[in-house]
Image: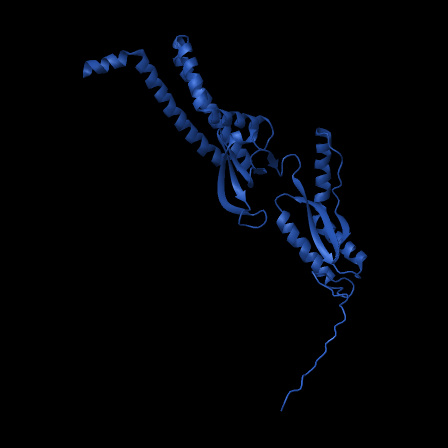
Length: 304
């Protein structure tokens, strides 16, 4: 038994394997220490996340270099074997390889970043982590109306960025255009309805206008895109039942639903102060005419 252990201890391959194992243990310990230390010294969530990711990448790169140095004298002998094995591994793990390529594209191609709200396939949510193989999203919507979290965490393979469109709600332009619509009866004071909606929008979402204009200016300089109006606008359209007023405005992508609620509440409250001048409409049916109806009642007389 002792002789067997001595032989193993003098075997260079065993020594290298033990060194790699020891290096792996050290890398794991350093990763845990770095994760805990960064959490104590950095309060900003974004900076803390990036620092942890960077420390893990650095530790594993150093471990890879250490392993290569240990086996550097034998790499030339294994070139052919690595080539044949690599081809088989590449075919079997093509989805993994494409996901790694997707991670590189996400990291350096400005698809999205942690904290962005995106739509990948049919899933809408906030990106909370970008791993080597999968992107983790906190889902919004589904059975929850609006843009609120559903509570489900969705993990999507990074290869998805090469297969389907990626919708980014908050990348270069962290605002969205949204609308609220109000049906008004014919014969109402249209100018009052229009000015009420526009004035309410200026009070509630006017703060976004200047910031949106600055960001859109950056978009115009970066992309081949035309200047766009970010001011609140009210448009009017008439149909068979009512006059429809549509208020279009820009809003922070995370406050779309709450802003809609605030606008509706303020507009309805303001219009309620003038019920005789502006009346809201609903679907109605009006009978404009009917054919003349003639009823002839005739009772036949019989034997008593």
